Image 1 (cartoon, protein in one colour):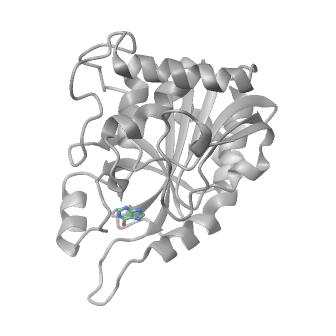
Image 2 (tube, helix red, strand yellow):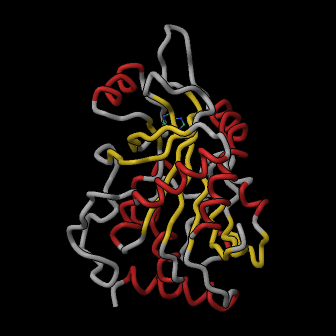
Length: 273
Ligand code: HPA
């Protein structure tokens, strides 16, 4: 068995000793979006620091625990806090928990993130359902020897974000009168926010939003056969005017403010699965 498969098995065995329940849905919560975890009726919470082979999240706004519990009447695995490439983890480390979830039986992965809006129609606090992504500005987590036990060498990326799940969430948003956009998420490494020229470039390239997470996790999830749904909270609008700046604090604040909408969408989506 390869090192990675051995590590995954070790981690899964550890978690399985603490939680025997099954869930086919996994959720990863983004920056400032950890409060959804409070809506979950938790059966078990495991701090990342206790989980063998899990990196420890260092970023402010990330609580760093794996939760098994109930949302919308369904059992779910939730990662409150994710690992970012900019923290110094390898792309494989960033995706490790996704693979752990897969081996725990997760088939559908829901992701949320905070992102900068580069589509001029977006406003701060809007939600954007990710319909596609651009991953070229980040490192592909599948570089290196392929783990055949997880998935194929050359995964198809024609539908990284499951169309049926997108349709379901659009219907839910309609019913609850929540405005949602659909768009292309551009993954970058961070940790710098983009320059004026970079925001402009991302828009020219076809991006509607830009952020420092999600694409690597999606690639790993698609590789191992999961359905993915992902949504961005638009927390800033890039740098458009002469004197505007962007801070992590305003990103977190905007994410917090939009969180109730996200909670409705995720809860209702899980209910419908
Ligand atoms: N750029 C990159 N990542 C982000 C941004 C942004 O403007 N906002 C929130 N995360």
